[in-house]
Each structure stands twice: as structure tokens, then as C-alpha cells.
Image 1 (tube, helix red, strand yellow):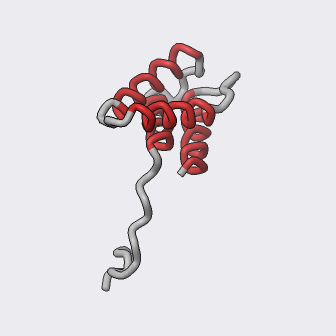
Image 2 (spheres, one colour):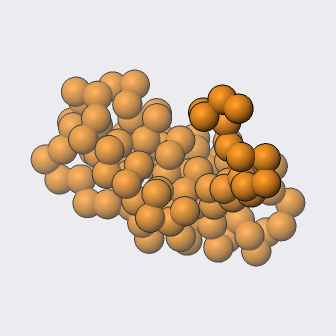
Length: 98
């Protein structure tokens, strides 16, 4: 068996939560301009795009609201950071959310 493949009886890890996915997509968008200084306009635009992409297909409004709240609560302060640095912080926050 190829060691890079999970053992057939080993369960797959659960997918990341919607909140974690929102943060990860926000980070990916910000990484497109890694040297730009982070500001509210950039973060809000990236976050809005990520939220639309991840949560629009979710039919349950309660799940959308809960996921949005979790993602917003996990957003990190960004004063003095560039987008690449902030993206790394968002990825770490996404991992903590699971």
C-alpha cells in the first residue's frame, strides 16, 4: 500500500467548518496581494467574497448565521500588517476553528 494513502479502515477527517472555510478563502484572496498593507476595505472585500462563495449555497439560514458569527469572531487584528502576514493569521485561526 502506498504510505501516502490513508489506511482503508481509517476514517477520513471531517471537512473544515464553514467558518474555517470562510477564513481560508479570505486568506487566499488576501494572498493575491501579499505586500499590500491591510486595511478595512481590503479585509471587508475579501471577507464578503469568501462569505458569498462559501455560504450562499448553504440552505439553512441558522447555519449561515452561526458560521458567519464564528468567522467574524475569529478575525484577527491587522494594524501594521501586510496582506501576506494577515493571511497567515487567518489560516491559523481557521485551523483552530476546525
